[in-house]
Image 1: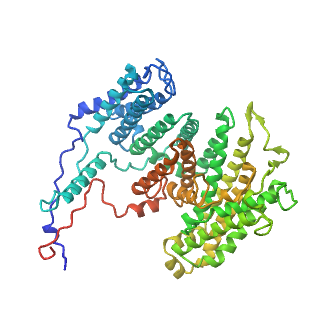
Image 2: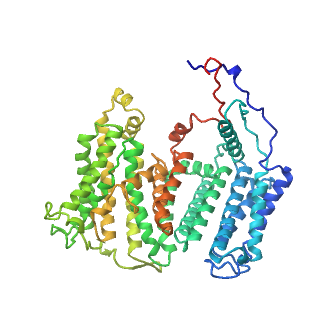
Image 3: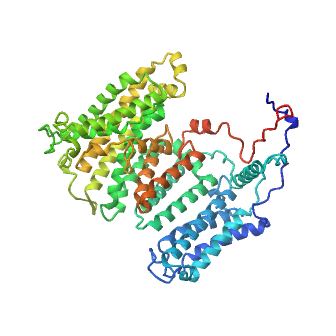
Length: 614
C-alpha cells in the first residue's frame, strides 16, 4: 500500500528571496535601459530600415514610417509611456492603476517581437541581412536593449521546491523546468488592481468612448492590412500590447466603467460599428464586415443554448440553413419551387418561424438526453438537414430545394423602396451593396443582443443557468427542466433563422454545402461552437469578439495554404490551455476554471513517498 509522508517530512520550499530580475542588472540600470530603449525604438521608426522598396510597405523613407514601422512605433511609444510612468511621473501613473513593471515587460516584448519579426522578414524576402539600412540595425538593438532592461526589473521571487537527488534525471529535469516556468510567470505577473473609485459620470463615459474609438481604429486597421507580413506583425503587436494594457489595469478599469453604464456602452458600441463603412473607400472590406456580423449573430444565438443553458449543440448551423432556405423560397427567386414573393418583413418572419418550428420538433424528443448523447443527436440532425436538402431535387426526393444546385438568383431586399443592391449616397459617402447589408445586419445583431440580455437577466435566464450548473439540483428545486431547455433551444434556433434570412440575400445563392459541421469557411457548427468558447460562454461581447477573430484571421492567413488549419488549431489549443474561460469570460466561469490553481508564483510540492510506500 502506497502512503504519503506527513507534511513535516516533505521538502521545504526555498524561502522568499529579495526581489531580483530574470537578468542580473541593477534596478536603476534596468529601468533606464528599458525606458531609453523605448525612446530609441520610437526614433528608429522614422529611419530607413532597408534600401529597396521591394519589401512591402516601403521602409526606405526617412522621416515618415511605413507599414510595419507604424506598429513598432506604437509598441515603442507604449514602452516609453510605461517606462516613464515607472519613475512616478505625475499624470502617467493614471495609465497604470495596476502597476507599471509587468506592463512595461509586455510592451517591450511587443516592440521586440514585431521589430525582430520585421528584420527576419526583410532578410528572407530580400536575401540576407545585408539589405538592412542603419535604421534596421538601430531598431533591432534598441528593442533588444529595452526588452533586456524590462526582464532585469526586480520582482518577488516565488516559492520553489528543491530537486530530490533520488529522482531520475528526467524527473529532475521536469522539476527544474516547472520551477523555471513558475519564476517566469511570476516575472510577468501583476497584482489585481484595486477597484477604481467612482468618477464623474461624464468622465467615465468619455473613457468608454475613447476605448470604443480605439477598438474601431484597431479593427479597421486589421481588416485593411494589405499584405501578409503586415497582418502577422499586426497580430503580434496587438496581442502583446493588449496584454500590457491588461497588466497595467486599464482593461479592468474600462470594464468597471462599462458595467456602470451598460446602456451607453451598448449604444456606443453599435454607433462605432455603424461608423465602420464610412472609414472604407470601397465595398471590399464591408463584405468581410457583413459576413462577420452574420457569423457573430448566429454565434450569439448559440450562446443561449450552450453558454446559458449548457446544452451542447453540434448541429446548430442547420437552423441557419433552415432560415436561409425558407426565406429564399418566399423571396421571389426564379429557382424557388413556390411562386411567392413576400416583402422583407414577411420573409424574415418565415425564416425565423421555420427555424423555430424545427427547433421545437428536434428539441422535443431529444432534450431529455444529456451531455454527449444530446451532442450526438444534434450532430446527426445537422447532417440529416444537409443530406435532405441535397437530395430534395425532384429525382432522389421531393422537388423542394433544387438539390445540390440550391436556390439561386435570390433578389436583393427592398425595404420601403430602399434597394439594398444599389449604391446610395449618405452625407457625401457612397455606400455600396455590402455596406447596405452591413447596416441591416447590424440592426438585427442589436435585436439579438437585446434578446440575449433581457432573457439572460430574466427568470427563465436564471433557470437556464441553474440547469447548466446542476440539472439534478435544479429539478429538485422545482424547475421544469424539459420546458426550460426547450425554450432555449427554440429561441436559439429562431435567432439563427433570423440571420439566415439576411445571409440568403447577401450570398444570392443557398446551397447545402454551406451548412456543414466542419469546413474551412465559416459559418459551420464547429466554428460557431469555437467562437462561443473562444470568446467566453455566457457573455454578450465574448461570442461577438470570438466570431470576429475566427472569421477574420483565417481570411487573412490564406497564404499558409494547407497549413492554415494546423496553425489555427494550434493557436486555439494554446488559448484553451492557458485561458480556458475565453477572451472575455463570465466572472463566475473565470473563478470556476481557476479556483483550484495556486497563487501566482507558487509551485506545488512534489509527492514524497515513505519507505513503506516505496
